[in-house]
Length: 227
Image (cartoon, rainbow, N blue to C red; front, side, top):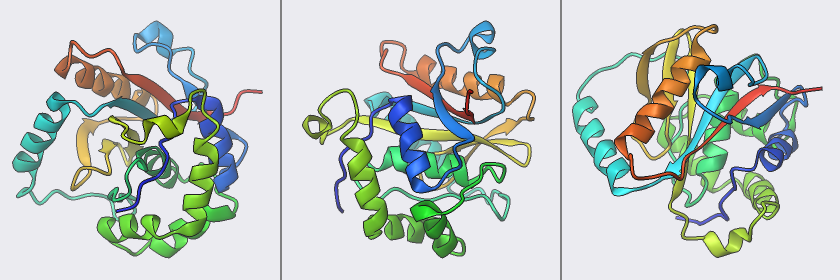
């Protein structure tokens, strides 16, 4: 398993990254300054995904294991075009979360570049095969590494990173948690375009409530770019 330099939760760097990958400049990554309804109203619309960054604490690992046991034998149905991939590259979770955010929103134009090529060549692959494809994609690796150096701190010092990015998206009226460290997508109930922001915020609050002594949570959103 290869190791990448971790991305920071810096919206300017992540916006530059998705544009370098081929996402239209009409879209950007922005900070979510708070999860209360009045703060959520400040997020530029439309909002296509939430991206949650949190520590891989014992609480998270315990919940992940319990969740896996609860769901593994359930034959859940997912949309055929739900793009889900596993993460097999250390510190690639930021890139995987961005791929999940963009690939599951057809309104977000990908006009070319390494992301379009990756999505085309992995369209018919399994989540595991997609994870392996990312690990061996030299162009994607180069783009990730270049942008990972542009954070506000020295990313090289954090190669043993304990933080993890996941994506929350609305796919055909279901709120999905897409976490490359999990074996399958996680459903969080029904949602709509109008309620997605509040519904995604509720899921983020559930992560925080499970680990009440932890304060190192960051929430970002994939939104329309501001003028």
